[in-house]
Image (cartoon, rainbow, N blue to C red; front, side, top):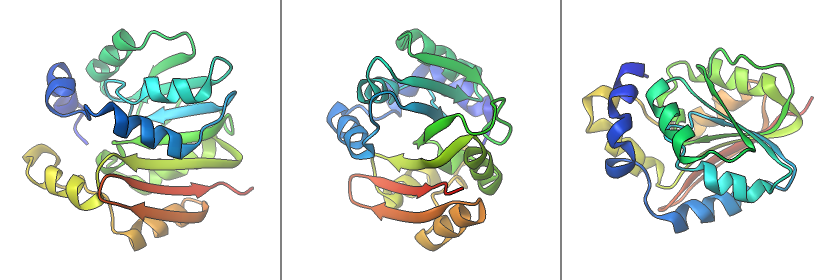
Length: 196
């Protein structure tokens, strides 16, 4: 994942690249079933497109931390989403500056393909989750559609969603259990649980 690429694209991301169909984002957020009072880490938040939907799911008692390694993307997210329930951190998912076991949910919306070391990233996600915490790797398009789009852009041509068997293997190798992959025409979701 190239920080320079995402910093350069931050100013046009929402107009040209980000999901614009709020109904799809709302449907995805409902499907994640994040309850009130949840503690959520949004990894690779980008310009914060999904943040309002997560905040709505959590209610006023929840706590949301949004991280991104590209400072320009994060700055746009902060500008758009100044809700008091959201804290922003510039960080790489493979080195999260966070204590162990503090989130009950980690969301990787439209970011997982860009993680260069996917196993190391998942191990960090596992570390910051509480027991029985869940990770959600999700998109508002299918794996095939996402991989096709990325393959057409030279800077992210290798940033792909792994096949189901590889995704399951990665989640299990990171220490997760109950790994499931749901790949539909209008969405992609891989989820797993931290048990102990």
